[in-house]
Image 1: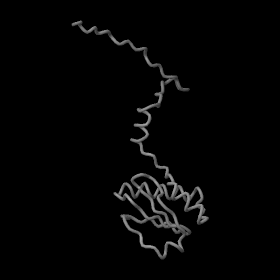
Image 2: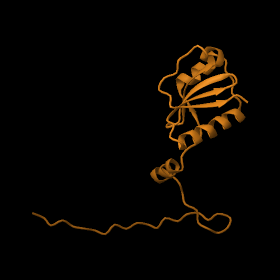
Image 3: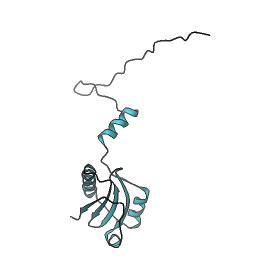
Image 4: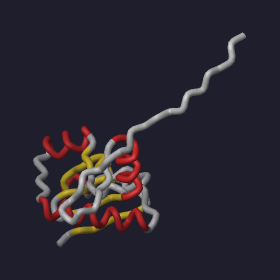
Length: 128
């Protein structure tokens, strides 16, 4: 039986590029970058395929400033423990997973007035 041979692992030092102030900045790639991004939390809402289809079918237009208000409100709701939210705007009703930052479905307000929403533990009203 042969004895195992252990060789020291040599690794070249990782050199990070200098930014304008002469301070080295970390490279955020791979797992470490994803982990840091997850720890910071991504506040941008994503649209599920279903929600994107509904917005297109129902011709619902939401401008950038309103998306910003929705994102901010969902973030605040998440801090208060909301996981699934109904977001009501002047023209639309959105079901949003605050836990996953994802718009699940969308409908116009006229259609929403005759619906029953279940599995919702928070409502955000943005009529202005």
